[in-house]
Amino acid sequence: MNYKTWVEIDERALSHNIVALKGLLSDGAKFCAVLKANAYGHGMVEVARVAARCNVDAFAVDNVDEALTLRAMLPSALIIVLGYTLKERYADAINNEIHLTVYDKEQIVGLEYAGAEHAKTAFIHLKIETGTARQGLLPDHLYDVLEVVGASSHVALAGVSTHFANIEDTSDTTFANRQFSVFQDVVAAIRNAGYQPEWIHCSNSAATILYPDTHGTLVRVGIAMYGIWPSEVVEQTVRRYNVPLELEPVLSWKTRIAQVKSLPAGTPISYGMTEVLRKHSRVAVLPIGYWDGFDRGLSSVAEVLVSGIRCKVLGRVCMNMVMVDVSQVPNADPEQEVVVLGRSGRFVVTAEEMAAHAGTISYEVLTRINPLLPRIML
Image (cartoon, rainbow, N blue to C red):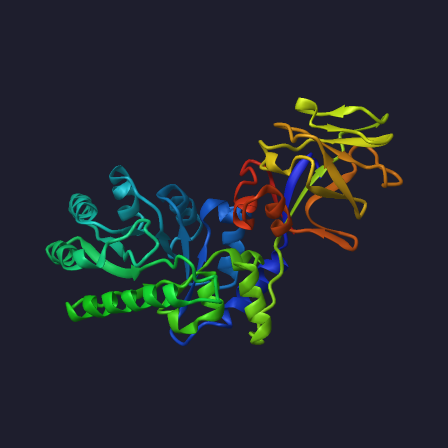
């Protein structure tokens, strides 16, 4: 393999996760694979091919550019843009039958104008603000928006959605229950007003796994599809209540040794001399750094795997390089494979472990892996 740093995607694990998660769906619910942020760092195009072979029902992305890439691959698939769409991109979405998330009158007016101009229908999913305080229509403004939808001959209300703020915390579901109740009331009001949107969706990974009552007609599965639990408490709840689900991590991240050198005790390592060798050590230089997505917060605390042995990061992570202690590795040589994230022998470095070192969450660790690094499907 002619790469110095790369990402490997386990097709079997990805397929397993999709099939296992689909097995949890309530009657009438369809499966939407969330592919935003380069499929959570896994490679959008690569993951989309596998998901399509697993017969998922829909795909969700953040923006129109991602959607157009998918449309070129999947001519008839349901593709939903979850994020903000510039009005200049309305025509691209309409001409390619890409569904857009909207939440105010101005967007609907703009889509009606673009739809009329191209003699086509704009398909919208009305996002309801129920408690996350992100994008979304406040329920008090529902009827004002429905009035604009009703006056629009080139806009079709295809879906209604919301997003949970804290459903991963299974110890106290009060807020999530309140959000779901508000959402149900809004959906009922929309139907009472004479609309019959096909896609009712609010379930993320955690809700898909634990709360079948929230499944509606579509679930949006992101992090769990990639073999990562939405939170530790979700995994604990699954085990406690014997939910039939085993997730398998899909992504491994690898690099190679660029150089090995023996250095005496007292040698400072990397920028700022923040770490000094306490004893004579063999130090390997790896061609990976924060440009690749290996967070600077991993400096002096993270570990990588060389020949199945945990090797500590020494000093500060650089833009394109990092140093690690390979003193315990019998034969550490240039171009030898190094596992940055994944398994080697009996040890494994998880996204959760890296996140804990960097003071963040597994989602960020994965999505910040540089999209320019090659993704290799295995």
